[in-house]
Image 1: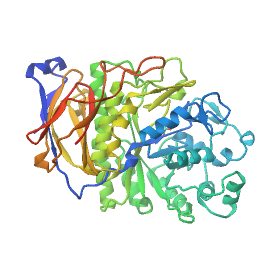
Image 2: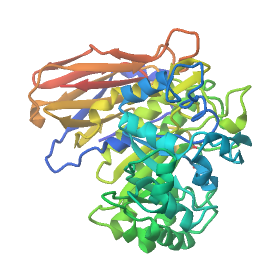
Image 3: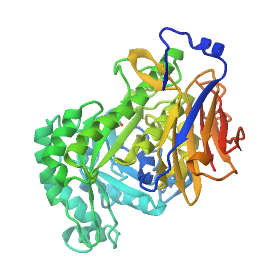
Image 4: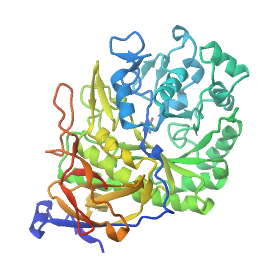
Length: 511
Ligand code: AHR
């Protein structure tokens, strides 16, 4: 039984009057449980602000240390995070992007105005070759989002042919541009937010459009596309219903976008919030659990075997842009509060691994809930980066379903969120459990019966991401305030794992 507490009626500080908070996590290992697709730890890289230009790509002639034009520090960060998949070139940008402008000699590439994002002039110096080569260099799976809004069926069909065909007219162009062998391309998105910036379509109209575009996106040679339909905006389950009914049989995956925003006119700054705002955000982030369940339930109607994946290919926090920056560039700081959102959301995706096959946090560098920020030749790793790093053991590990018995908070707007959330997995005999305590003040004593779950190990190793103050963040020219540190406050006793989660912390333990 979950214990209910209304934050509206009881000040948080009063929690301590009840003694130390306690929670129990019960594990249910099963050989039938799904594997957590590593793609849940995916990234999103859009031509937006300095995500690509300055964040990843500086060009071969830059003074900033680079390899073939990619920043060396950022290459290192991508490798360290074991990024499995990257979505590109947008976002809204994708539906105004014409790929043929981004191939061939750089000096001949036409310029365009990035009208979605601050009216910045795009010189197309980062195009198909630059993206595909980056993925190849790092062993990252590319995910290309095709232009449906302002493109054509022919344009998308030719793009796939250019990238993946061994021979033929598009392969010849590719070879002339210096790339002999085709690349492998698995993930292909057919439009982005076609209910919004991608064309303002109805789901009925888009379903037909999807079928048409998907028909001509061919498999060349041994390449096998995984075709992704544009799915719903957050709570719009009708979109999923109509698209699954009309086009689901031609989809391998359908997307879902979810940003933690209630009031788009007044989002607030990443660094500027009070307790009430903090708990509101935790509740808003945890809504993703209900959303995934609701969309999955609809998908089950048309696809009970769960062949079609639900891909949360944009998610995260979205704050007002940092003062002094171009508001169209969506540059925001990233505090310990964002790290809690990341961990809580990743727990939800892990726990829904039967349907959620990919997730791409928005966005990788310098935009929204980024992994890293860059300024000139400096790079800062964010608290969110460290959460992703600590969750690496879950990539491609078998999910261990679990129950968490913990206090449930009722927060602003009537939302509810558990004080402690968790996810667990097993790989190569190692059990990994990640836990989040969202309380700003209270540690929580957690008991996890291991022996009862058939888990025998006694040796526990762990990491923690936490901060002195929830507002703490990492900034240029300063010592890191939020990082990933070894965690010692856990032990196995009488077949149980006992751990005290400090307030506002993300703890990952391997047994
Ligand atoms: O991530 C920023 C934008 O948010 C994307 O371009 C768009 O798809 C979404 O609305």
